[in-house]
Length: 473
Image (cartoon, rainbow, N blue to C red; front, top):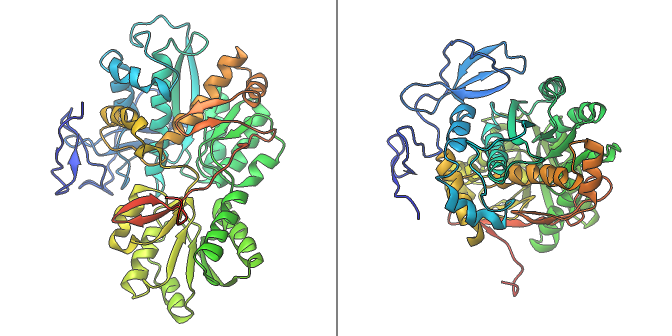
């Protein structure tokens, strides 16, 4: 049964789902940007924990060494390790009925109480992703998806008799920090890693995991070079950009009929540059002209120089290969500059609810490709969404199920192999079909999905609506 919503005290008209005094609506809150010093929690390792007495929206943050700590309220971070784990594992039996409904997309119905069951130790799985910085919102969504999967497996007695425990570290979507995170996980002796999120972070970290014999399943790192390294213990739950880029280009040129294209991308970023190249190559093969490619720095909030160049040399279509936030800001500033007649198409980096919220009316008619279908809109996922909201008190991010699916791949592989040995688990994964919220996943020898589909969405009345060819709807 759905719980009644009330208005968020900080954002008129935004509902929150009550349950505790610090329920949130998922939007930025008054303490945004504040910094305060505080004492290091005992035994802290990289991650986040609550700190903002009275509203529950603030976060503490510490580095991968557990040393440098500051007080920070990221604009879109919305929950915390201590709070979420406490609520998840303290409510095992209260969520029994929801757990039964979720059996279709999870490991099965609840059979034990995670609070009292005598597990034969812990099965520690690392989670690596951005828990601070501009991409923290999606990083936290993915982390919570993985945590929810861990809870579902623990309700069935865990995996190999052990309780699944997610250990999150913040890689800030930065390649150098990702290397530190990977080394920290090696020191901790985790059995596997869910992550990283970005291709730039995943590429260098993957080599460290491979050398240490640690299984890695990335959530959204889509650059094809990662799986071309010959690493046998690497997998991903998303398609690759050598598929996404051409699909986007064919949609732009063949379906939309656009021939003059400008590309906006993050200079030096593995994902952004890779998707740009794949898109441009296919678009040019189809007869389109890339009239300009404009690099920007991730985190940019003022796209005025690029907007002015678009005004001076107008394309028929702008292809954006960056992250959220980014495309939403560019699109809004194009709209304000009177360039709304230029068609906007983005890669999967903009497939976030925040893109819709922040771009506002400027997003109407924009196109966004995705690595995943919008499964949260399916009736079969209603109970999954409700449990996520019950645990974390905000609507799950559109890509939250990717964190869930990544952990499923790891744990189902361990179940099938009967061990946590990375090589044996990897071999088991290659020889099985794994049921996830995204449907069945099967893998090739490189750790890439055998079936890869790139859906494209159009924004209509503030929502992502999957585009279908005329006559197929």
